[in-house]
Length: 110
Length: 113
Image 1 (cartoon, rainbow over the protein chains, first blue to last red):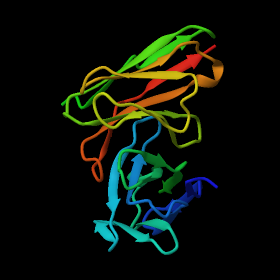
Image 2 (image 1 turned 60 degrees about the horizontal axis):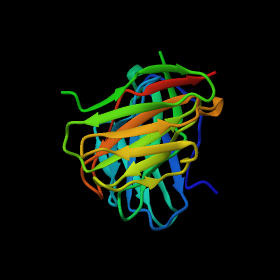
Image 3 (image 1 turned 180 degrees about the vertical axis):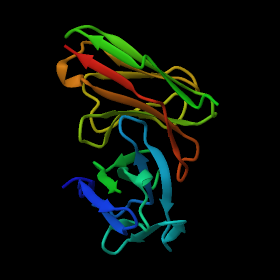
Protein backbone atom coordinates (compact mmCIF):
# COMPACT_ATOMS: atom_id res chain seq x y z
CA UNK A 1 0.00 0.00 0.00
CA UNK A 2 1.30 3.46 -0.87
CA UNK A 3 2.13 5.75 2.00
CA UNK A 4 0.01 8.54 0.56
CA UNK A 5 -2.86 8.01 -1.89
CA UNK A 6 -4.93 10.47 -3.83
CA UNK A 7 -7.59 10.16 -6.51
CA UNK A 8 -5.71 11.40 -9.60
CA UNK A 9 -8.89 12.74 -11.23
CA UNK A 10 -9.16 14.62 -13.45
CA UNK A 11 -11.90 16.64 -11.84
CA UNK A 12 -13.66 18.93 -14.31
CA UNK A 13 -16.01 21.43 -12.67
CA UNK A 14 -17.76 24.63 -13.78
CA UNK A 15 -16.86 27.99 -12.35
CA UNK A 16 -18.56 28.57 -9.05
CA UNK A 17 -18.76 24.90 -8.14
CA UNK A 18 -17.64 23.37 -4.87
CA UNK A 19 -15.15 20.53 -5.16
CA UNK A 20 -13.51 18.32 -2.56
CA UNK A 21 -10.43 16.12 -2.64
CA UNK A 22 -9.40 13.45 -0.18
CA UNK A 23 -6.01 12.01 0.58
CA UNK A 24 -5.41 8.89 2.64
CA UNK A 25 -2.20 8.00 4.44
CA UNK A 26 -1.05 4.65 5.76
CA UNK A 27 1.37 5.58 8.54
CA UNK A 28 -0.44 6.39 11.77
CA UNK A 29 2.75 8.07 13.04
CA UNK A 30 2.35 10.84 10.46
CA UNK A 31 2.42 14.18 12.20
CA UNK A 32 2.24 17.05 9.75
CA UNK A 33 -0.03 17.47 6.77
CA UNK A 34 -0.07 19.90 3.90
CA UNK A 35 -1.73 20.68 0.60
CA UNK A 36 0.51 21.95 -2.19
CA UNK A 37 -0.54 23.31 -5.55
CA UNK A 38 1.36 22.68 -8.77
CA UNK A 39 0.68 24.50 -12.00
CA UNK A 40 1.59 22.82 -15.26
CA UNK A 41 5.36 22.33 -15.56
CA UNK A 42 6.04 24.57 -12.57
CA UNK A 43 7.36 23.92 -9.09
CA UNK A 44 4.91 23.01 -6.29
CA UNK A 45 3.94 25.73 -3.84
CA UNK A 46 2.38 25.47 -0.42
CA UNK A 47 -1.37 26.05 -0.48
CA UNK A 48 -2.07 25.43 3.18
CA UNK A 49 -1.09 23.40 6.20
CA UNK A 50 -3.70 21.10 7.73
CA UNK A 51 -4.30 21.36 11.44
CA UNK A 52 -6.05 18.90 13.73
CA UNK A 53 -8.92 21.29 14.34
CA UNK A 54 -9.36 22.02 10.65
CA UNK A 55 -8.55 25.34 9.07
CA UNK A 56 -9.87 27.71 6.48
CA UNK A 57 -8.20 30.21 4.18
CA UNK A 58 -10.69 32.14 2.13
CA UNK A 59 -12.42 29.71 -0.23
CA UNK A 60 -10.23 26.80 0.88
CA UNK A 61 -10.93 24.53 3.85
CA UNK A 62 -8.65 21.73 4.99
CA UNK A 63 -9.54 19.02 7.47
CA UNK A 64 -7.75 16.14 9.15
CA UNK A 65 -9.35 12.89 10.29
CA UNK A 66 -6.75 10.95 12.27
CA UNK A 67 -9.09 8.08 13.12
CA UNK A 68 -9.67 7.30 9.44
CA UNK A 69 -6.24 8.56 8.38
CA UNK A 70 -7.20 11.02 5.71
CA UNK A 71 -7.06 14.72 5.00
CA UNK A 72 -9.37 16.69 2.78
CA UNK A 73 -9.39 19.91 0.80
CA UNK A 74 -12.60 21.74 -0.04
CA UNK A 75 -12.66 24.52 -2.60
CA UNK A 76 -15.75 26.70 -2.71
CA UNK A 77 -16.81 29.03 -5.52
CA UNK A 78 -14.17 27.61 -7.91
CA UNK A 79 -12.31 30.06 -10.13
CA UNK A 80 -10.63 29.41 -13.47
CA UNK A 81 -7.36 30.19 -11.72
CA UNK A 82 -7.88 27.22 -9.39
CA UNK A 83 -7.09 24.87 -12.28
CA UNK A 84 -3.97 23.02 -11.17
CA UNK A 85 -2.78 19.78 -9.62
CA UNK A 86 -3.26 19.53 -5.86
CA UNK A 87 -0.67 17.50 -3.99
CA UNK A 88 -1.15 15.99 -0.56
CA UNK A 89 2.01 15.97 1.55
CA UNK A 90 2.66 14.09 4.78
CA UNK A 91 5.58 14.12 7.17
CA UNK A 92 6.47 11.90 10.07
CA UNK A 93 7.35 12.92 13.60
CA UNK A 94 10.90 13.94 12.75
CA UNK A 95 9.55 16.30 10.16
CA UNK A 96 12.55 15.98 7.90
CA UNK A 97 11.14 13.59 5.35
CA UNK A 98 8.04 14.60 3.41
CA UNK A 99 6.09 12.22 1.19
CA UNK A 100 3.97 13.46 -1.69
CA UNK A 101 0.83 11.94 -3.11
CA UNK A 102 0.54 11.63 -6.87
CA UNK A 103 -1.72 14.66 -7.06
CA UNK A 104 -5.30 15.38 -8.07
CA UNK A 105 -5.80 17.31 -11.28
CA UNK A 106 -8.50 19.97 -11.25
CA UNK A 107 -9.80 21.86 -14.26
CA UNK A 108 -12.32 24.64 -13.72
CA UNK A 109 -14.30 25.40 -16.87
CA UNK A 110 -15.98 28.67 -17.83
CA UNK B 1 14.62 37.18 -3.86
CA UNK B 2 16.52 34.16 -5.15
CA UNK B 3 15.17 31.48 -2.79
CA UNK B 4 16.21 28.11 -4.26
CA UNK B 5 18.28 28.15 -7.42
CA UNK B 6 18.87 25.07 -9.56
CA UNK B 7 21.20 24.66 -12.50
CA UNK B 8 21.02 23.68 -15.26
CA UNK B 9 17.36 24.15 -16.17
CA UNK B 10 17.60 21.84 -19.17
CA UNK B 11 20.07 19.08 -20.06
CA UNK B 12 20.26 16.32 -22.64
CA UNK B 13 22.61 13.42 -21.94
CA UNK B 14 23.56 10.24 -23.70
CA UNK B 15 23.29 6.95 -21.86
CA UNK B 16 26.35 6.43 -19.70
CA UNK B 17 27.30 10.08 -19.38
CA UNK B 18 27.60 11.70 -15.99
CA UNK B 19 26.42 15.05 -14.72
CA UNK B 20 25.78 17.02 -11.56
CA UNK B 21 22.70 19.07 -10.79
CA UNK B 22 23.48 22.03 -8.57
CA UNK B 23 21.18 23.53 -5.97
CA UNK B 24 21.68 26.49 -3.68
CA UNK B 25 19.38 28.22 -1.20
CA UNK B 26 19.82 31.60 0.45
CA UNK B 27 17.21 31.23 3.22
CA UNK B 28 19.55 29.70 5.82
CA UNK B 29 17.46 26.51 5.82
CA UNK B 30 18.77 23.38 7.51
CA UNK B 31 17.00 20.76 5.38
CA UNK B 32 17.41 20.26 1.65
CA UNK B 33 15.85 17.73 -0.71
CA UNK B 34 16.05 16.29 -4.20
CA UNK B 35 12.85 15.00 -5.80
CA UNK B 36 12.10 13.65 -9.24
CA UNK B 37 8.76 13.94 -11.01
CA UNK B 38 7.75 11.79 -13.93
CA UNK B 39 4.79 12.56 -16.21
CA UNK B 40 1.47 12.11 -14.43
CA UNK B 41 3.14 11.26 -11.15
CA UNK B 42 3.80 12.96 -7.89
CA UNK B 43 7.19 13.83 -6.54
CA UNK B 44 9.41 11.00 -5.36
CA UNK B 45 12.17 11.67 -2.88
CA UNK B 46 15.65 10.74 -4.09
CA UNK B 47 17.84 11.98 -1.23
CA UNK B 48 17.56 14.52 1.52
CA UNK B 49 19.81 16.28 3.98
CA UNK B 50 18.25 17.12 7.31
CA UNK B 51 21.19 19.30 8.26
CA UNK B 52 24.64 20.24 7.07
CA UNK B 53 26.87 17.19 7.14
CA UNK B 54 24.12 14.58 6.90
CA UNK B 55 22.44 12.90 3.94
CA UNK B 56 19.85 10.14 3.80
CA UNK B 57 18.26 8.02 1.10
CA UNK B 58 14.72 8.61 0.03
CA UNK B 59 12.38 6.38 -1.96
CA UNK B 60 14.38 6.15 -5.19
CA UNK B 61 18.12 6.65 -4.48
CA UNK B 62 19.55 4.08 -6.90
CA UNK B 63 21.70 5.61 -9.60
CA UNK B 64 22.25 8.87 -7.72
CA UNK B 65 24.70 10.37 -5.27
CA UNK B 66 24.47 13.59 -3.33
CA UNK B 67 26.77 16.02 -1.58
CA UNK B 68 25.79 18.57 1.03
CA UNK B 69 28.68 20.88 0.30
CA UNK B 70 27.76 23.43 2.97
CA UNK B 71 24.55 24.77 4.46
CA UNK B 72 23.60 26.52 1.22
CA UNK B 73 24.39 23.89 -1.39
CA UNK B 74 23.15 20.38 -2.10
CA UNK B 75 24.17 18.70 -5.35
CA UNK B 76 22.81 15.61 -7.09
CA UNK B 77 25.09 13.49 -9.28
CA UNK B 78 24.21 10.94 -11.92
CA UNK B 79 27.32 8.81 -12.40
CA UNK B 80 26.11 6.85 -15.43
CA UNK B 81 22.86 8.21 -16.80
CA UNK B 82 20.14 5.85 -17.99
CA UNK B 83 16.97 6.57 -20.00
CA UNK B 84 14.94 5.71 -16.88
CA UNK B 85 16.41 8.81 -15.27
CA UNK B 86 14.70 11.08 -17.78
CA UNK B 87 12.63 13.26 -15.52
CA UNK B 88 12.12 16.69 -13.99
CA UNK B 89 14.27 17.15 -10.91
CA UNK B 90 13.28 19.53 -8.14
CA UNK B 91 15.47 20.74 -5.35
CA UNK B 92 13.76 22.06 -2.21
CA UNK B 93 14.67 23.43 1.19
CA UNK B 94 12.86 23.74 4.50
CA UNK B 95 13.56 25.72 7.63
CA UNK B 96 11.66 24.18 10.54
CA UNK B 97 12.12 20.46 11.15
CA UNK B 98 8.50 19.78 12.13
CA UNK B 99 6.39 22.33 10.39
CA UNK B 100 7.48 24.74 7.81
CA UNK B 101 7.07 25.21 4.13
CA UNK B 102 9.09 23.47 1.43
CA UNK B 103 10.52 25.97 -1.01
CA UNK B 104 11.25 24.57 -4.44
CA UNK B 105 13.56 25.54 -7.23
CA UNK B 106 12.13 25.88 -10.72
CA UNK B 107 13.17 22.38 -11.71
CA UNK B 108 15.77 20.83 -14.00
CA UNK B 109 14.48 18.98 -17.03
CA UNK B 110 16.78 16.09 -17.88
CA UNK B 111 16.52 13.88 -20.95
CA UNK B 112 18.70 10.80 -21.30
CA UNK B 113 18.89 9.38 -24.82
